[in-house]
Length: 257
Image (cartoon, rainbow, N blue to C red; front, side, top):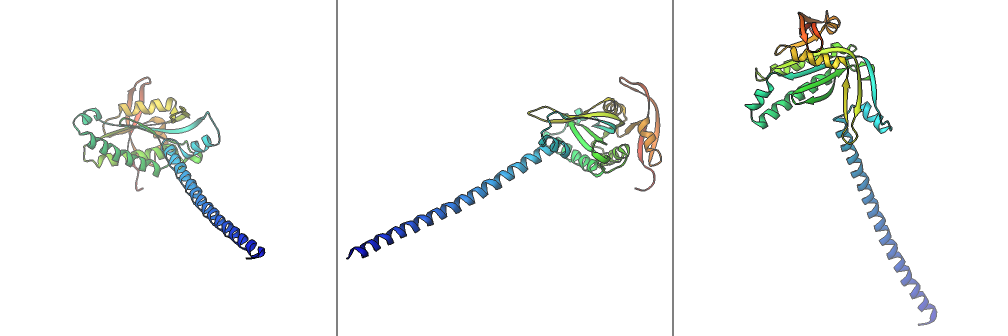
């Protein structure tokens, strides 16, 4: 074999090795690309799960502000309806009901409360044991209802109806007040969105002093509901820290709707 043929054979072997190396590199590149795509998809899914968990405890607008870098979120709102509810005789009910049944019933009722609030643009703030706190009027534009008191009253009527559907097993008391509140985020490792103010305290007192199965509202709330809802004057009720206070019981809507 002459030198030219030998050199040609060596070149062909090198070319084949280079082609083989290129094929291996191409396979590695495709494998890395698929791996990177999977990593990005997993990361997006984890971000979505994290966002969903955050939205379980904070409103979307507050989550957006946290993502934008705000570290202290505290806002004053001048016209907010505060709704407090709890279940009558819950301690005794818990003592004679199995844990799975109790939690299941409580979850079903709170889910119905959530749906009622969502229907009228009322925001759930938190639950504490069997107590449920929600407000209307925090969202820009007032939420789905123009008047916070109307939204809270509408939600309260549906909450009571959902409780009455248990055929007497559960009874709810509700208190509603309107007024200014401060709303903000507290905590760092575990965020909590909460509201503070005299309207919050008064709504709690109205709920505590309400008869079983009743929705008790303040005079201020009653004035805003007159004409659209049926109300019954209770008279001066002794509210803790407030003294004798004129209150009303909300019976239902006036006419259809």
